[in-house]
Image 1 (cartoon, rainbow, N blue to C red):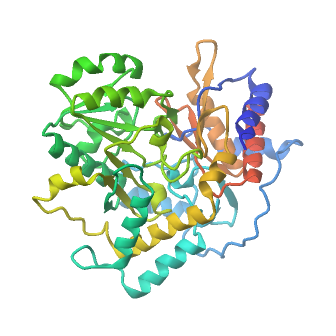
Image 2: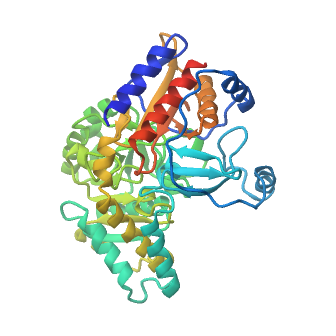
Image 3: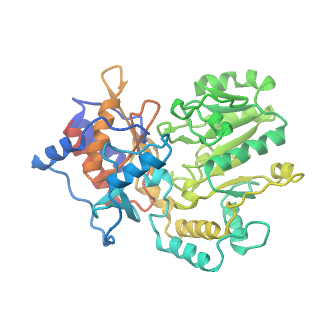
Length: 460
């Protein structure tokens, strides 16, 4: 439904541009900051209004009664026992207790349209029955038996994933997270090239759990003052291409790229960009790594992998999130030639190869194929805004100088929650809404999201 992007632009711009300059070249992306407005003020306004938006689409599911601790009780425990660096959304945080397909339910049984998919993690849908069944059936038989033994679930999943890859990308490694996957990708590339230097782009996120992945990440909110290794960040992609040939003989031998910047604001690379870059860097012996943590598994709609939109084939691909539909599961896929550089030593991951995650991951691949989710993402899009398929965003700016509308974004963020839509926020200035729902998101859901955004902006 390419019309969804046009719907957002036409209806929200026409009704709200007097108060907000809506930059139609940007997409929706969540951020880690808190809203600065009270939810009660909007609730009162909505209650008094006679032009409230439509209700959520009908959904034949009744959540189970919740008898656990309240949101306030959980928040107090979290403040006491959970690390202070972890953030939460909204002034009054939601206590989400149940999920079903593209919807979430809070402690009071209220249903929300999940337009962020657990930070782009839920691909098939929350608690998809076929994925759940595969996980539960394997759990009844064997939960943990890593690669020191043989198990068909591990081999079957690796084979199925390799079959989705182009070219000679046929060797698979499994992990618990994207940060782990990116760490191995860096290790493989450094061993293969014999060079420690690496190039990444400005405003990207590649993980934050180690000095290696923090070094790759180029967003200040995730950086700590620790040694990060020989990593270079390209500030301007166009100038970067022009100067790359001069840099390479004396500096990096690895090029790591995310195909659509997720945390950085759902910024898509220009057409043909990677073809130019790959041509330059490969002449200098550089290994090319594609980060498919958010763009993979058909989410962009027109291709299964984000790098395919650029008509290139990387040397190493990393992935997580959608691969497990919520399971702690990540992977690296590379060529036999590159993988062979680690054959002289041992590489091992305790939990990454466990049969439960392997069975669940295999079920995810089968469900995505069976339900034709890639084609569905190409059909239900939020179009003419930045991004592809169900990975898009809208950037909000103010005035002729297009100043980032951080305050207005925070207000709308809270208003959308009051209307029953959970979005993400991100971008360099925290002024981009990220719309990245589960891939079972329907046209009715899209209509409701557009109505809610239209209504919320009209109330600014």
